[in-house]
Image 1: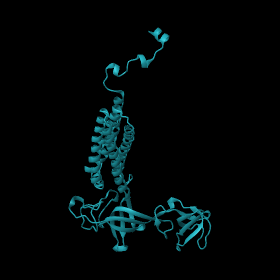
Image 2 (image 1 turned 90 degrees about the vertical axis):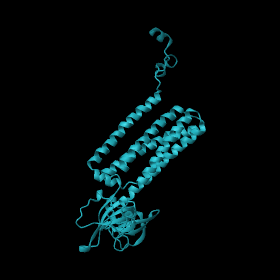
Image 3 (image 1 turned 120 degrees about the horizontal axis):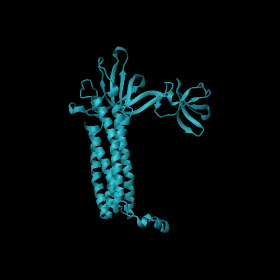
Length: 366
């Protein structure tokens, strides 16, 4: 046999039997590969979900309180969107296997549309959290001072350097490298507009003059030197009793509205349905009166770290599904169908949907 190989050469693709089909194994290599990949993904998500469950069991009251700030209605809509996308994906696989090009294009298109719809709703949820603040601030001075908790959406934040001028957050600040008129070297100023090498500024000093100066006479102010001046928030608020101990990092407004002046929940609705909903009101809070300000981003606390980690990783998997779905759709439009590949992508998409079925009750309902 060795002599035959040496004399005539060995061409595997012509002489060797197929390693899978030739041995009677009914599972195609691609399907086996996708199942192994999904097995690794299951272990990955089990680690994330297990960590969340352990942390929640250690602080059940905090997790329950913070979970009330999530929007259950949007999450419920997203659940229906993904369930419907699983149906359209299954129909797309069936259409590909039956070479029904028109139905394949329709079903893949609907699946991609549902995927983008899911991500859009998730964007709305994330945006809501990034603007949601809980602020502990005082009103008045001396014995008449009162402390309120404000819970709502931050509309804007004015900043300053020297404390005389307040401008919207994100405004560029510079300081003079030499005296300009009555303004001494080192005077900070907010940049109002750029005109080539000339800057339109307003000085952050007692005079607060506006002027146009050469850019060469200024240097940027470091971000760490810029501080908050005024919080503009559209919120509900509650008076804090003088004997009340409160941790604003774990606080949400409750159904007890005896001292409430506006709504009773983070979205303008009374918790538990015991009190009628009230409209949010606009408040301007001086930064000097703010004792604590917490935003509901990933750094908020353990619950929101888990929330953004779990939903963020799941969102990345949704995006990871949109890419092959879009490629299959493009090929279907061009007249090509790939039944096996469509089935593999379908298995992955069903897995992504199944993960959300676990995330929805764990984060929003329990």
